Image (cartoon, rainbow, N blue to C red; front, side, top):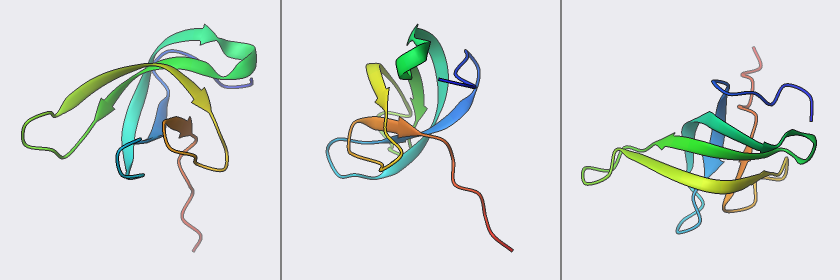
Length: 74
């Protein structure tokens, strides 16, 4: 999958509630399939950073997956 590399910023969709959080790709498992490890930044008091793996790419934003950040249209 084009563009998948360590350090890229993506959106992670949390399984518990479908909320989107910023994440950084911290490892690439299978670049051709978009399977990565993520460090995710939450706004939770008790858990600011979480590490999740493996995380699969999904443009449809299913829970437990990642996608490229949406671009604001002006």
